[in-house]
Length: 471
Ligand code: F6P
Ligand code: MG
Image 1 (cartoon, protein in one colour):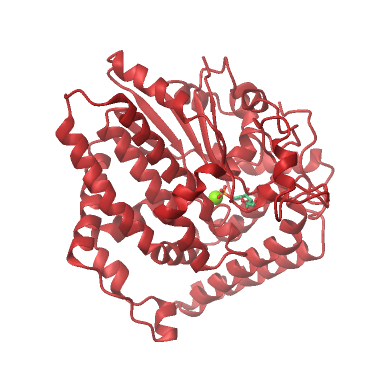
Image 2: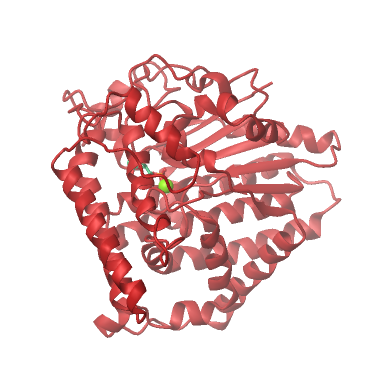
């Protein structure tokens, strides 16, 4: 069902998959080992601790296998049907080794493998080995979180007051664009790239100044088409109008996703928003259902969240600055709003294990028909982030001028699914560019020059917002 265009590989020297396999994966696995080790050593129950030690050893062996380019071994059966899918594909790929394999498959396999160490245990099932990191980075995005909380409250209150009154269409459209752009750039800072960015870099990326400056970095911007679609459905007076968001990262990105969701509901551009999280810890920072709960908890009690020193603060003797009353109020307002929307059924989570399958989304119509049917009933399905974009396009080496609608294959026109991808570029694949644009970007500083590598697309500095009308 996949595209015939060659996929990016970890053996391809010009692909970001090459340094990813050799440098980034070992760093990610080291982080996993450190976290597990920390939890194991804090554990009082002897049986649980002993089992935890075995998990740590297993993870250390996994790191060894990656670093020594060993063949990928079949995933052990932990009772979920996706194991068979992974192992069948592994066989079809000819039992490749870590550093000479399709990048997308192998990266999914990595996180699925890490997961089995926990899922096959007795005491550590469901343990999220990335939770610490996710919370820590969310805390460190405090300036941007506070800035947006203030703006969100104003915005929602204005929208509520204006309900039923005629508004200026042009400013409504601009507002939609702005909220979507906030949501887009929230993706620039996922934790799997943290191996190369400092917390200071992240804070710089998240502020409103940075966002304005980054507008010119959106290479394809189909937001107007998506807006027209939602506005049309609203004007037609359709009763239930759903927007789906296939989530990417927890923490700050989930926070801006909820800002988008809340805004769409307040502006009447949707009546229901369905969020699609992952079913296991995935690509370091991706949202699992527990992250949604953790975010709401943090907002429910913002002083506790921001003012209680964390484990690391304790080590460094740091005392976090207190929140002002206004700041604490604004965060509590978000909590009230979002938990109300959640309890009234306007905002819901809908997990599906399809999102953690190894393959591209080209397979959706064949392997998960029910999910496809469900997505067809949505006005718009928003796919957040880099990995979702790689999966939509099959992570294939498309000519960058290929239309997005072609690169997403069976999910394109005629599929019945309206798709909007909000993606900051952190990998090689990119489509929908104008002729010559890729070449120009390669000539910019750090863009890759004549190396044959599309380096400009690796860092999250550039973005693409692509729409496909599925009708
Ligand atoms: O390309 C770098 C990378 O870390 C990939 O491993 C992965 O596709 C992606 O970025 C994760 O980014 P996102 O969270 O935006 O999907
Ligand atoms: Mg991610």
